[in-house]
Image (cartoon, rainbow, N blue to C red; front, top):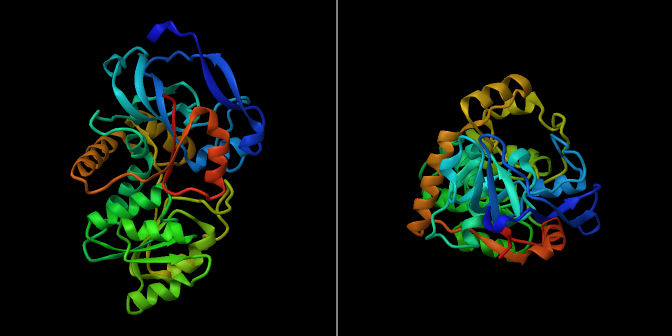
Length: 353
């Protein structure tokens, strides 16, 4: 390892609560990769709402033993490899962390199945902002909805990381975009990215605006990053044979089945309801998770295809990651609290050096 370092700094939560109160900057041992794992020297950390939940103790499918470091996504250079993963050594990567935590640190363990090379010609901070939002939006719009030129898509929380990616991928498919967001600044960003109509969901009736803009038909696709708070209205805004893409739950939620998913309401809508889980796995792991938890993970081979296409679109200047804030490692607690309070646009990125 570089300079034979033995310890690292890591933001860890010792109890659940607000980030500014419970995150502590600790000095801990650098972890060692097990067989097939990567140890990434972290250069940048993109925030995700899942990270916030792992600090507050919110909607967590798995609860690691306290204290632990949140952080489900990192960008950096592979510093050490476990047996069988030696080909990754020295590569510049974007990656999900093992167990979706451990990324708020100077080094992080990552499985190769959810790591992708990031070429040097795509610089920071944008390079660190590409992975989760664009992979998720690609899966939702291109694979699940199979969006077509001329169709209309309604994108909720459109000024966030995933929403801003979805706008750009929809525009790239020559679709028409109606975006919702919660402030004038966010609405302006949506229109700058290509949204034809931007609706302030806190003041305006987006269902009425959708119906007016589509001559009463409704949108072909709803791309929902919010969940319960907008689902009932969104079902009224979708057309016959439309697609409802459920990929985010920024509003209140529980781990249990969402109470608002009423089968009769779905049946009467005559739509396709599609879930999107961005989690990659090899064939054996996917089968194990399907048997044990009933989840369908995305084949890692498709992730590589998506990553290649996203990089190609960036190089052709068809898409660009939206980075709303870049902060230093020391500012992690305050910065992720700002994200949780909806004070940011696009992605917030932590640069370590």
